Amino acid sequence: MKDILELMNTDNFKYIISIDCEGTNFDKNLENNVLNLERFLKLNSDNGITTILFITPFFADMLHKLNLTEKIKEYNVIFGLHIHPENLPEELNLKCSFLKPEEHLLASYNFDEQKIIIKHSMDYLKEKGIEPIQIYRGGYFSMNNDTAKALWELTDIRFESHNIYREQYSVNNGLLTSLPVYAKDEKEELRLEYFSSDKLIELLNEAKEKDRYAIGVTHSYLLDPLDFHYERDGLKEDIHQIQSKLIQEESV
Image (cartoon, rainbow, N blue to C red; front, side, top):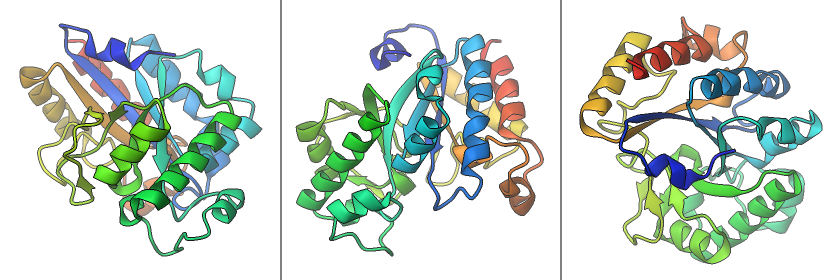
């Protein structure tokens, strides 16, 4: 595992990839996607790339069931918390009786409600062996000042990572250090499944010219190259292939 402070203490450009490790709301192929995670982590670690895993409770549960939690700690990984409040295990729903099934954004809840959701989500991940948890990302990039305050009061998390141009992100209280996804606006971001590898290489080279690091983003439901999302969304390259190309470009 890696310490997040190591990412910042460098004079050389770093490409970092993050994965939103989703639950059953997006992933109907959860077990096979989790089984393909280690392949992606190995590719990155073998090339000196750090992977930030933003983990939901359902994903943590599958890692635990497949006995992979300790194994993935052998790679260059950082654990982060990821929350979709409408997609929590039943035992968490029972502890958060105020949850609304149709509400997808954590920041739509008030401060006290967010604290309860965050507390029980953090406890659940730790029970499954996911620790230390060093950074936060909201589902749909949802975060506001109440989220930051709750994380500051309840946890040791002092970093967050979002596309700061998204309307779901509204944070200005300075409590947590922002490590944003590399983006030019709300739509154009270094996201492996958004653009062709040529376009992503162009974005990565732009980042090299002006930043110390670039954080890319992808999603766990694409780890299995045979996942239905590829055919449904017309994706021609899988994320393993795209990541290999970006790694080659980063090393130039």
